[in-house]
Amino acid sequence: MHTAEFLETEPTEISSVLAGGYNHPLLRQWQSERQLTKNMLIFPLFISDNPDDFTEIDSLPNINRIGVHRLKDYLKPLVAKGLRSVILFGVPLIPGTKDPVGTAADDPAGPVIQGIKFIRESFPELYIICDVCLCEYTSHGHCGVLYDDGTINRELSVSRLAAVAVNYAKAGAHCVAPSDMIDGRIRDIKRGLINANLAHKTFVLSYAAKFSGNLYGPFRDAACSAPSDGDRKCYQLPPAGRGLARRALERDMSEGADGIIVKPSTFYLDIMRDASEICKDLPICAYHVSGEYAMLHAAAEKGVVDLKTIAFESHQGFLRAGARLIITYLAPEFLDWLDEEN
Ligand code: PB1
Image (tube, rainbow, N blue to C red; front, side):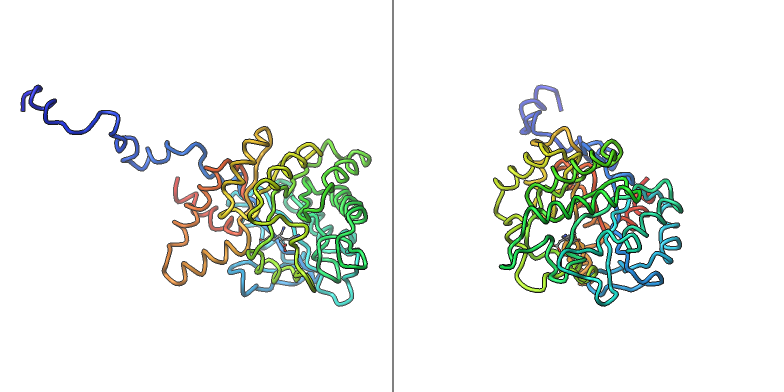
C-alpha cells in the first residue's frame, strides 16, 4: 500500500493509540506510580495473656491468637522473608482482667508490653507499632472511659489513652497508633510523649479517618473486643461523612500526628485520596481490615475470585489512592508473592 493510500485509509487518530504503552508485563509495572514492596507491609499480631496460646480464629482465616512464648517460631520465618513491621493488639483472656477504664491495657505484665519487650529483644530489626485503644481491655468493650449514661467521657478517655501510649513507648514501642477515634487524643498523646522525653523517637500514627461500619467483626472475634451494648457510631465516623473525615485529617495533623491511617480501605479510596492531598507531607497508611480480608477469602473459597490476583488488585488500589503503607492480614502471603513476582 502506498503511503498516500495508507494515510487516507487509516481510521485511527494517532493520539487514540494507548495499547502500545501497556502491552507487555514490564510496561504494566512501569504504568504504576508506586509498586507494592515488602517494606510497606505491616502485619497485625493478636497477642494473648496466655503465653503458650496459639489459637485459630474461625472468622479470620490463617490468623491466630498468639502467646508470647510462641512468637519466636511464628515471626522467625516471616522476618526471614522480609517482614519489616508488625502492629500489636493485646487480648486479655484471663477472667476478671477487664474493668471500666481498661487498666490491663498497659499492665507491665500484660500481653502488649511483654510482647514489645520480647520482640525488641528477639527481632531488633522489626519495627513495632502498638495499637492504642481501650476496647480490648474495658468491661464494657468501648474504646474509651464512659459517663454513667454510657457516652464517652472525652477528658478521662484521652488522658487514659495518652498514659497507655507513653507506657508502650517506654516499654520500647517504636510507634503508637491510637485507634479509638476520640476527639483530641492525638494532642494529649503527643504532649505525653514530649513530657516523657520520648516524642523524638516515637512515631504517632493516627487512625484519623476511621469509619464505623460492618467490617470489623472478625477482629472483634479475635480480640474479644465487641462493645457489650450499643455501638461505636458516636465516636467512629459515619461512612457517608467525607467532610468529617477531611476535618479529622486536618485536626490530627495539626495535633502532631506523624502519619495517618485510613480505615477501612476498599470502600474508602476517596478518603485515602483526600488524605494524600490534605496530609500530603505525611505517610498515609491503608488498613485492610478484618472484614475486607475475610470477604476476599470467602470469595476465593467460592471460586468467585483468585486470592492472589484480587489481593494485588485491592492493595494496588490503596497505593493508587495515595497510601505508602498497608496494614494487612495478607502480609505473610505477600512476602511470598512478591518474591514470585520478581
Ligand atoms: O482489622 C480490623 O477489623 C481492625 C479493627 C480495629 C483495630 N484498630 C478496631 C475496630 C473496632 O472494633 O471498632 C478496634 C478499635 N479500637
